[in-house]
Image (cartoon, rainbow, N blue to C red; front, side, top):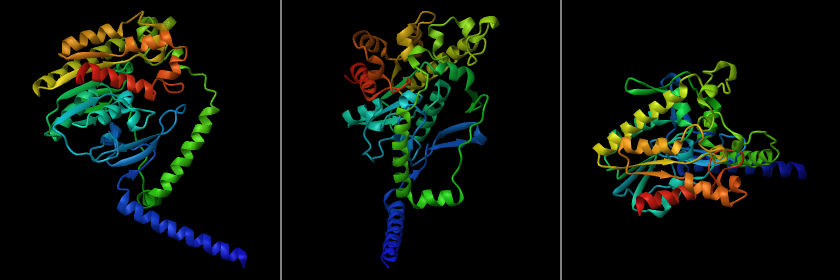
Length: 369
């Protein structure tokens, strides 16, 4: 009898919870929910963030899940509706600008948004994009939005060279992946019904997954240490001929093909100059941002000076200022033994909250003050 009463109470609780979750999902939590919020387009030749989506996103095994909200155009944002302002700032970039590993308020775009209430901040970045996609997304943004853009920021990341050489190409008026197609699993059937109607259950489950991943990451014994080197950014301190395999007997990386580094650099230059031209036509201030990776700080720029390349790129593209984080990060490395943990997420190249705050400070100093 007692067992039967317990069973009835449990059943009533489950039914009431499901009804409450259904009401919550239909009338209160408007975003769709998913584990990554990506969508593929044009038969897998292009990808972007899905519109009006929420995710406890995890892209890299060594770092914790982080909350991602996308707006009605698929841009990452705070998740809160804000009043439209007269001033607009647009950010272009890849995973560093997107803020991989950090909740919105801890990203440098989120920090700026919190400080400058009189600006609209639009983050057009998506992981693994590069300048070919940056200028494409900027053009699309201008076509759809009548708001005047006062400032345009593009973060040129070290990985952009490889992504320009191996990943993205212009295809008529569109941009396509060069050598691969990417398909993200679409929700269908019961899975779609569950995610559309029982979002509370998904949110609870994602919290549990996030906790289990934190425990898992603490026990992770991966040998990868970004301070020891990364083939995608090694061209600044490694002989190019050997890295790319032009000297086949001493090829050091499967990532690069002979001539790939020059191809990537040339495409960056061409696309960033085009972004500068766009900025000039709409009377917008244009800024380039650069920052080092852990191995950049460890090995220096002995084979290719990334800072010099971007100073010259700033001149060629008519940018108002190069916002260079190399000196600030070098200073911290020189003065702090635990600089790696201070600036970068666990076993990764992406920034901590403190690292993001340094980027925000430099942007404020060079473009808002």
